[in-house]
Length: 541
Image 1 (cartoon, rainbow, N blue to C red):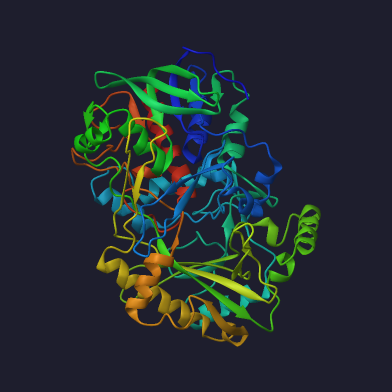
Image 2: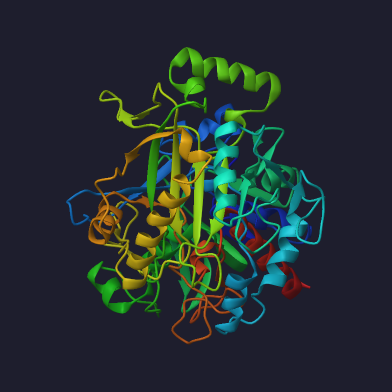
């Protein structure tokens, strides 16, 4: 992969080739006057495994393609490792590809909080411009964009049984998960094209690389921002061979490292809470006390079931020959289990009937992995029929933090997720698990259930559910909020995504989201970048 020469100057430097960075690189280079450098700490995405949706099982925690962030110890003593993409395309190259955009209420709440212009209509316009949806264009989806959206298929008997049980519980089936804001269940919408992954790199970066005004530097990690007073003038980077190089930005540096890497880069550069910076041995250049704060992440519970009387996907993946046969069928048809991401079905509904809006998201797939290979530590697909059901309360109120502990890239950051630290989150987790059990105990799905393998019926009392959720719950891979946008002087970025107290610097990724959208981060982060490109290009003109 070509590298830009040392000491080369660009109009814009984009730090991070993930969901936001790839889209920005495309849109900013549409104007031939803009010389753009895109920096990525990881390597290329040419390996064919990245095209296979189920390939993320092999890449999500592979250090060649991802970086994991270790948490502080949980109450039971364990440590969790939260993975993020470190490869061209970022997390869009290794994630489960659920294209769940969320709905109007969460986006409009951001504008009501004082972030002028950040509302549902603006995001919807961006979504419609990005999408090329299998179901065709409509008032709520796009039909001619760069990101292909497909519905998981073909339909499967176990999933259809759960859909019917949801209907018995008042949650209707909808073909398009993103077509309404009410309670609904749907086969998962994924950013795939003919059963192959449509990452941000494939959709936006690959076409842009034909332009002479775009330079991509892989295996190049941003160590610090270069400041002249409070103006950011460039980026100091470390290459894979440990050599150092500094790039200069004539106009702006756009940080798109995500909710984990973006706040750490700001802090290493002296932008953050003075006390935290001093403790890490970094001179404070710009006081910004909320950098690295407001970390929010979904925390839910995975239920696993042993089933009988229905086939599911276990028979297709419970041994190497079966998985290879499933792969062979996928190569011929681009359909079936391998052709979509981690889950086949999704539902959004109320676990608390008094909620104004749906408050819980579920992911379901007719695969169970109740055992672990002691040699590799990898989950083993069960030989009997089974299913996974993940229940995630959608709007966590618990706030964690992520901060540097030293001045360089080698210093291990301190990640305190603070899961379920508020009464609201604990209350919602209990309701979410009880609602999940209620739905799976409803016919017709209930007639296939032999037993609940995980967490198991012994986890029944409120306190037991809460402690299980804290220590053995599921993180949603939807971390955000660490450089949150807001109208106050101590908020990290303003409504134009400029870092307060600086010039020539913006943060454009999920770290600027104040709260969880009513969906996943994949699509909203790309839409955020689309809106940011509109802002930057308008200023350029």
